[in-house]
Length: 83
Length: 83
Image 1 (cartoon, rainbow over the protein chains, first blue to last red):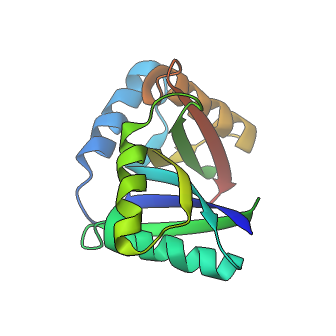
Image 2 (image 1 turned 30 degrees about the vertical axis):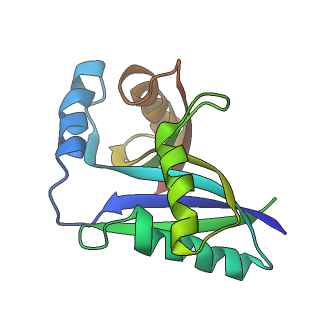
């Protein structure tokens, strides 16, 4: 079966996020004054061929841990949907 | 009211995604051989103070169009949740 994995990777809470800080500073200049706590990370999608959603989730988790995320500084969240 | 905006930004379909290509090439080396169509973009979260979810969505859309996304090369998707 074919699944789509959507992976969100964000810097862990409490860690410095200079990119997020830069965007937070830029938002008032385009008229958005009520934004706070801006955090910026990566968004990754991939198609996965797997036996079950569970197996696809394990594959995506494996990819995050070994390749996509830096677990010391980042956390990840995975969504699997059947295609 | 306080809302959380989650913004996904991805390179448009059909456009070259060299970062996604690099990850796709790396996945078989960690044992994931059934992945395809890997695409990599940005994931942004922010807290927004707004009158309604609709207003928060408009603010996030504005931020995407004017600051966060390059609309020539990227598409975006916004999720708003009440906090």
